[in-house]
Length: 310
Ligand code: GUN
Image (cartoon, rainbow, N blue to C red):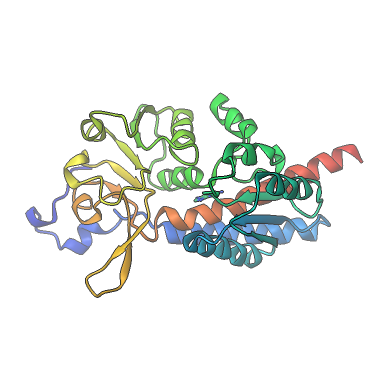
């Protein structure tokens, strides 16, 4: 597809933009509805209702909103939701005790501990304490190791959502140069592994990378997950590239209120990119949809083990 600049074209801008913006909200809704139908069928077949436990330590307002949304969506698809809200002063041992109880509870098939955690708690110790078959965030060493070996396991929700969005516009990513900006355990590293599995040539840029802009300009697929709003400008993007913006930051708006923005300056990137995710309404809704998808997968796997041993 040739590069499309609205100001140089005779076509109306709406037509040029049409089809460029990846509808994360719509794709997430379709996935959630599908999970809902599959949960109903799974329960009809006599299986235990899938259960998801979400643990929040402290009272970070953004995290509170995220976990409440997770509980609402969990109920919406017919699963059981178990919420555990712990005080900011919770010790690591107290949290590990709760995880041990959740690991042993047969009504619970998935466990998610919302990040970030207070400073006194080591997130690696916590994610590794979750039983690998209940680790619906895919952040523990067993699932992370499986992903790095390219074998089946539970894949972290946000990068899995990004992959689904990429697949909505790319039938085959073989040989494409994918650049991931951000190397977190939550997004950047698992995203790079997923893109490798899709046969992309993958470059990971991070805080110490010296030529991030030049690398970004080489990308056929650009995934940005830095948490730095407005980092990626229009001139960082190769014409026609697919841009996935994972960032979501609340900033002051002109009307005295606030608005959500991504790591990419959307208005600059839109005329250059072949496809792009908006913020909000892009990657964000996919994360919860993928969490529900992973929880159903976990419930199925547990049931398969129970069926095999009965
Ligand atoms: N905090 C922000 N995103 C996530 C996520 O995907 N999983 C967890 N556990 N915490 C988060």
